[in-house]
Every structure is written in structure tokens, then in C-alpha cells.
Image 1: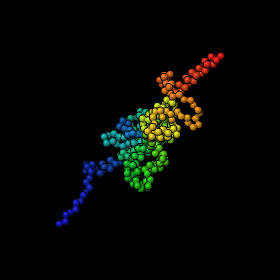
Image 2: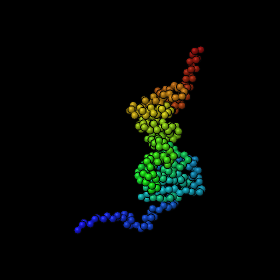
Image 3: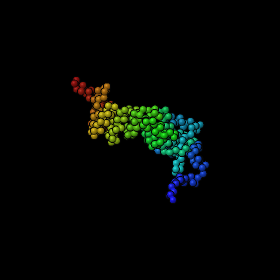
Image 4: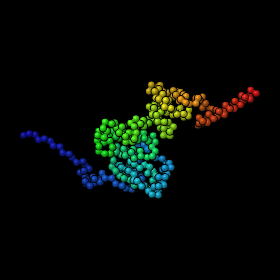
Length: 311
């Protein structure tokens, strides 16, 4: 007698055994509810800055008068409470307006689905800082790679969606940036915070900032100290030079100072004195501009005294 073939039947999950179909459908269904603000936590490593600026105060005034017009998007947390996906500014404005609850769409989302929605919803803002784009693009690109078969919130297979393109190319198309620009923004995440802040403030341009991102963190800190002492920022050419010295293992404090104090193209000829040589003559906290003004006044007095002697 032939041995019977073993037949494997799929077993239902434990949740399916102890819940009704209606309960399972309800768990997948999204709904709108007024949720207490204290029950909503921020999205982990949220890359967008929520500031109490004029725009925020205007939003708070509008919410105080009319309430939150567009519900935020949250997802339930396994341990209880909710996690904000889209609506951090509305939540902060609601707090400023003295509200205790806010309307939210509650939706079950995976980590990667939530990340993609969070990034995309905030990129629609009128002004997005370079640092915000940097971390947002990095988070979304990582999520797209992890998704594997899904590149967005549809069920279209990744291979079909990409059609020979890299995930970085696809991200670039979605956000309106070239693949190289996506790479440049993501490089900014390697900068130490004070230098990245200078990029946001427009003190350092994108191209030199990308070159500086290849410097080890310790050397970035030395560069930051040098910029503050010399009251200057690196040009693209200077940043490239520092990167080359770093890659050769030859970048140190003296080299950074030498590069940062060299004359730039089209720069008016300047006479510079290393700040360390004159620090002892000034009180702690004196700015380079104050030092310069004091030195000029001292030289004027010296010139008058010398002229008086000549008479």
C-alpha cells in the first residue's frame, strides 16, 4: 500500500481564532476621532523642525477661533496611545491655542508606510530647510529599500515600479530632485549639528557643505572652531582642499587654519593675524569685529603719537 502524501493545511493565526470577522475588519478600518493631545507622541526622529515663529502663531490663532480644519494622521501604538504621522505643527499649534484634543484620522500603518507618509506630507510645505530635506530623504530612501516588493503605498511590485531605476532615482522623481541632488542632501546628514545649522542659515552653500561632510566629526569640530575664531566660512575650493588633506590623513588644526586664512579668488587683499596671538589682549567673548575695531583705534593713536614726535 502506497504511503499517503502528507497534506499541510494553513493554520489560522491566534488572533483569528479568538476574534470575529467584524472585529478583524474593524481593526483594519481607519476612522476619525477627537484624541487628547497628551496621548499623541511625536514620530521617532522626526526630521522637520516645529518652531514657534510667526507662521505658527497665526496657525494657533486660527485653531483657537475655528479649531483644526484638517485632521492629523496618527497610528495606534501597541502599548497604548497614538503616534503622530502627519500633523506635528497642528498639534503644537493646538497646544498653543489651549486645546486639549484634536481631530485625527486613526490608521494602522507599518513603520515604513508611516515613514513615507510622514516625509511626503511635510515636503509639501512652502519652505523646507536643507537639514529637513537631508534627514527626510534619508528616512524615506531607507524605508523604500526595506519595503522590497512595495515602493510606495500601492501594491505595485517594486521591480515593475522601478523599471530598471534605482530607488534613489525613483525618490528623485517623486520629490522633483535629480539623483545627484538626493545624494548631496543625504550627505548633509554626516555634518555636525552646528555646521548643518550654518547650511540652514545660508552661511555655507550646498556644494562646500557636501565636501565638508566627508571630514571626520573631530575635524569638523576643529573647522567650526576655526570659522568662529577667524569669522569666515569655506569656499567650495577650500572645502575640496580640506577633504583631500583628510583623505590623505594629513588634515590637522594647522592645515585647517592655513586653508581658511588663504586669500580667496576676487578677494580684497587682507592682512591677517592669527587670533591666538592677540587673544591675551582681549576679554573672553570679544568678537573678531570688536577686536578689529580696537586694533584700528590703537593704530590711529599710535600714528598720532608718532607724528607728534616727528614735529
